[in-house]
Amino acid sequence: MADPGTNGKFLRTIEWDMMDKRKFFPLSMLSSFSVRCALYPLTVIKTQLQVQFRNDIYKGMIDAGIKIYRAEGVPGLYRGFWISSVQIVSGVFYISTYEGVRHVLGQYGANQRVKSLVAGGCASLVGQTIIVPFDVISQHAMVLGMGAHGGKNGAVNPLGINFDKGSSRLRITRDIAREILRRDGVGGFYRGYTASLMAYVPNSAMWWAFYHLYQDELLKIVPPWVSHLFVQCVAGSFGGFTTTIITNPLDIVRARLQVQRLDSMSVAFRELWHEEHFHMFFKGLTARLVQSAAFSFSIILGYETIKRVSVNEQYRHMIKW
Image 1: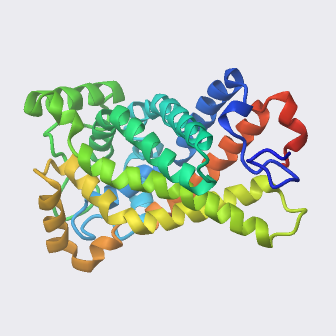
Image 2: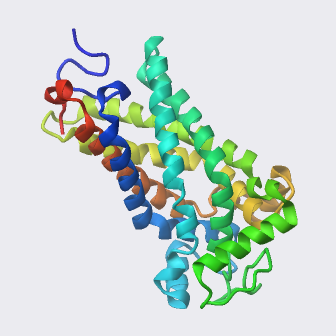
């Protein structure tokens, strides 16, 4: 009898209980860190585009990248990277929750898409609870001094941090954390937490569901000789495009709440609507689409490769690369 995760010929989905966790966890952390290193500049560009007033500082993704690089060099594109890299730890909890919930739902007979939808949402809830404080700090670091190299309103420094280009990353991070604590207490590190959940829980749930949907549909139309791993990477990119377009306004509201220290989601939404009107649905969208497609492709490439490497011996004959 074929395994539930197979189509009778090869294993479409490598499940949690099919892998050697001693291989999976360290390789997964290494893969996540590598992807974050490569794609972090897109996160900086996206965040700065989202928090600027209209097109006051940057005209678009490429313009933002050029201006940041000219003003600060490569370090400017990696502003807040080290504090953000703590997300690697939350990533372990994220993927453990995702695979664990899928495994439990599978025991109750849930299909692939339902398992992915529910597990993706649960995983994001756990991951965001861990990472939001670090996200708040890293986003303040990303926009610190933004606009000093152009724009009508001067440099962006919502916390009033004493900043210059020669400041060490450690000192900047410490000053940001200290100022947040002084102004808002511990709760300040969870500013925008509800918005983060509203943006990322549906995003994660839909992304995994769309990933499996697109994978199934692509496998129906591609020739048998096409790499299964390549099909999965393309499905991940399509899933990233779809969820990004749907959730972009929520992500902008989240960024505004965390960086501009607004009082509530409704205030952030009203300010965005007043500034942008219908353009708010597309603000920073190009950067987010590029980031999402590249991130999704890279994450699936690493994730599915690691699952293949970590699979237990009895399932190796069912693997298709």
